[in-house]
Image 1: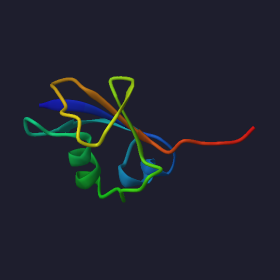
Image 2: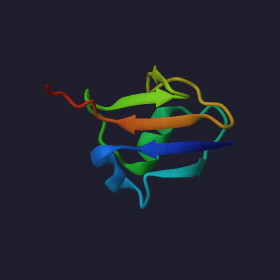
Image 3: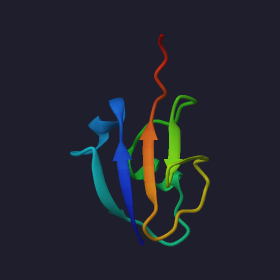
Length: 75
């Protein structure tokens, strides 16, 4: 299946571009994307799937959009 991956902040350095298509096997999860890109897992790694907060274990579907970023604080 094909998903769209968007990387924000420091995660952009793990790929040559900020947004790209990735081919994954059926039953893949955001963790599959993280492992394939060799992004270190940390509590500050946030995942959105189709614009909604998701866990690393959520099953993806054809056409899913996976966004990986770190929340930014400040005021």
